[in-house]
Image 1: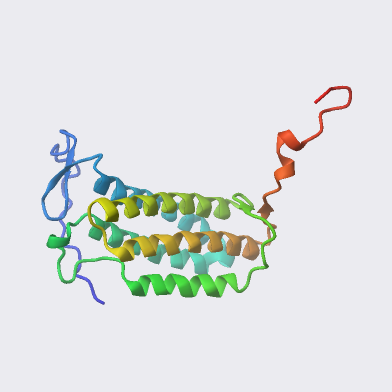
Image 2: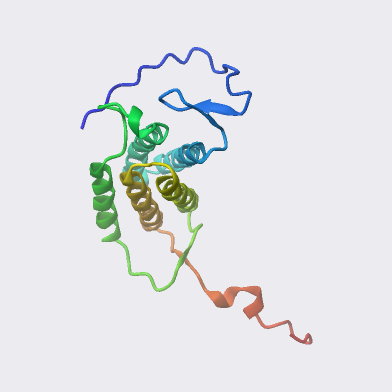
Length: 209
């Protein structure tokens, strides 16, 4: 599916039209900046920024450059998602950018391909084996928040069902990509061990629990 090219002229960065606490949707409707729809696509925008940060980190090492290319594509997809979330159903154009089932299918293919290289897990993974892994887990958690907001938006107003599917699959992909990055970089994963909490550690000699 081919989308329309952007037709923008961003000559002025500030317009002052949002000083009253409102912003405009694609169709021109004005909403409060803390409205659910704005919060939803604003969180997608936040996710895009974190994905960009992870992409920069992935580009710094040839072993993860393939992932950098995927993350750049995801950034474009997230902008497409923001476009459709910022549009009421009656205002959606025939070639308006949006995420599609093809985007979801591509994520699924990449999850399966990279997960096939990974060892089975014996516990939950803690973020932080590598810098890239940590950044991808930040992306994952922001993606889950965006997904929760999209679920609420779909229930209380309107949002394309594919938007929830895309975010759900992307969060899974970000988890797998973090593990894959650690494997490529030769760093062992950090696994959750409940007995490494302070409450499970015996007190020093001479002190009572």
